Length: 66
Image 1: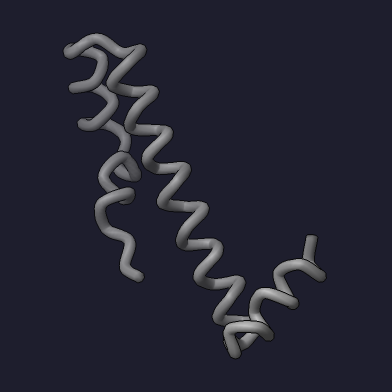
Image 2: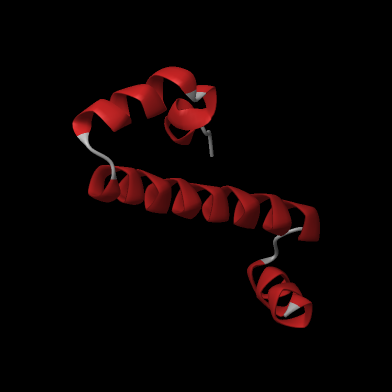
């Protein structure tokens, strides 16, 4: 897997560190999107209120910067 990432990075002229950092942001954004979908689908309105009130990392999906 790492060889594939290295080939892609060298093809675009991207530093390996930048490639891994960008991929971590992309995976984090994808995970946050899935988390929001699961919360909306499986929690009631009251449960969502408790989730977003007492989970300080609940709003972090909207605070990442690329």
